[in-house]
Image (tube, rainbow, N blue to C red):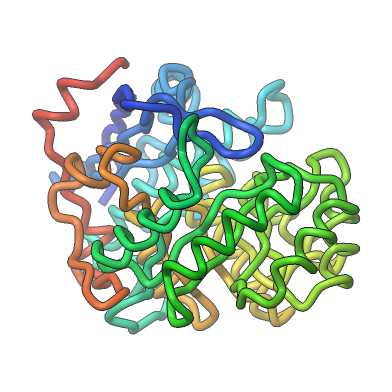
Length: 369
């Protein structure tokens, strides 16, 4: 069975307000949908990426640069196809965007493998879990938002069936962000998972100060605490200075970058994003590195993909989503067969591949390329 065609579509959905963290803004929900077909009529359907305003360029790369390297290969030759695509990174001036495009194709190919074998991607990776805990990303900085609003937000996540929240910090002084996290913890209660994410917003001094301030609040992890330019060394310093586990990896684009995080002793969790790196093929390498080092695997957003990946490895942890309907209309509406959420967990689909079905009326409405 050979790969016969690859099609990519970019969509952009305007959001009602800015869902920004300490170092970025999000005003549109952008993603890329990839469909691969075989000469025997088997078809895959996946989507990758959350804030892909360069979706048109990813679509161009897939159609013009990557598809010619993959078409005609056997469906089961995923590793061979990945290396053929990755070879382009050696001469590319924009490796990050190219790797995002490679991820789209690689995920579509893994979806095809699962469909060809009649197994989910999680099963292909060796996993057998039926459900995974799910947390919502939230705690965004918004004009006019009060401390009481953060408390009500946590209550809404509980009602939505979430096990916890990844709460945005790093945009204010440590003492001011402490107030926001304290309100969130008080409102959520002691059995609610609360982790914090600074999005590389602080220097090491402020990150350590903040970590020590929030240690009594039973925080599950402190994500990307330090500024981008030397964050591995700085994170290792933060990790040595607090009891709170440190998480990073979403800003890496290869498993080699993940290896450097692990070798530096900078992380307790790695949340390497399959859509930012080289797809499932490279995520699996990163997961194996972490397993041997005693580092647990999380995943940055992308529950439509991460659900299968984290269920497929023994050290997988939380699935992430945006429970606020205004933040992620793709998760809420375009993903037509999203698995059930109950008692803080999300069902792991046993459908072949990733088992994703999309509402193509909505896709056509918002497509830009």
